[in-house]
Length: 394
Image (cartoon, rainbow, N blue to C red; front, side, top):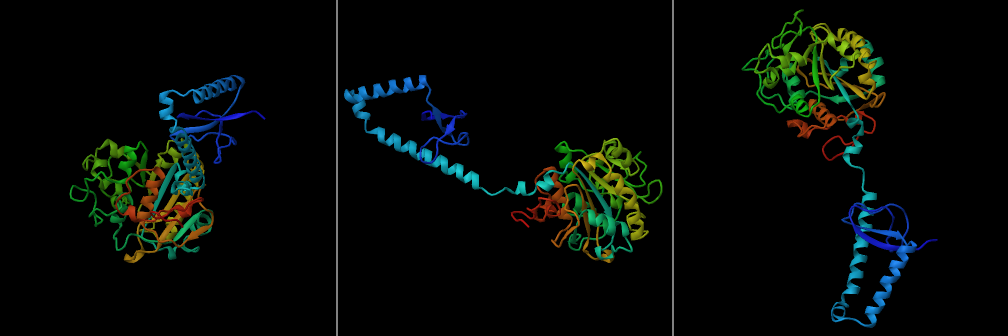
């Protein structure tokens, strides 16, 4: 075996063998996380010659010490002790790093791996009413392929529809507590909401609203078929997205698109990363019942699932705005994704704040918006999920 010597340098570290806790040379790599590197260097012929010369000079100084040498001789043992102390601390720090538990970010890898999100909103139905007879596609096809929550509620006492849609975007109803169309008196000037944070982070977003014509900003209900409800479109209530309630706002028109364009965008792979989808008043279970919505989903969801955006770590979140008859639920939350647990359910308490927090974690935009800061995210529905509520795991 060759000979080795202990060497020390400042960062960046060289790559020879590191020093072990006992001061011996063994192993591979270097202690690159330290302010100084202590490592082992193989003694080549040239280095051995240089080392021998240093030893000869040291012996000469010991035999005939100068005045300065005599004054400083007492420092040598202290210097060696300091080096050993540094080495002990270095090894201790390295051991601490090796045994450190996984961070919350790694426990949420199921969320952080999601690239494209689709949110589909239905209306006014308790989860108990989504039965195999009333909603055969949801219960017998969608639920087994994904994960769902049995204790998901609209925010406590939040009714009617409109404030729940606002909550999904902002973590609060922001005082918009009616079902009126967007107007100067029924909108908000805040820029502290999800899609504005996405926009600021360079993350694309779009909403697909069934039965809008796509030529104006859809501030008012009706649409070309009379079944578009502005109260089910949260984005028209934020003035920064509508140029202060301007029906000709180009930004609003570009981001509020007819539902019919969804299939084209999926086929051409021009889909945004965050997509909010609202059926019309019949297909969202509001006017025409549960079975109508179930049929609409059976025609819509396969188009999403067959897309490149979905197959490349996409996720579909299917939920309802509020409970039936003024109740808070529980309402449905079903997640379908290549990253979601299959045929899985949990009984963790969730609200719309949980969905909003989940979106912020997926796209890594902060700070958490209002009540989202207090909510448990939906990570348990995904493989490798776990962090959930702030500072907790499930």
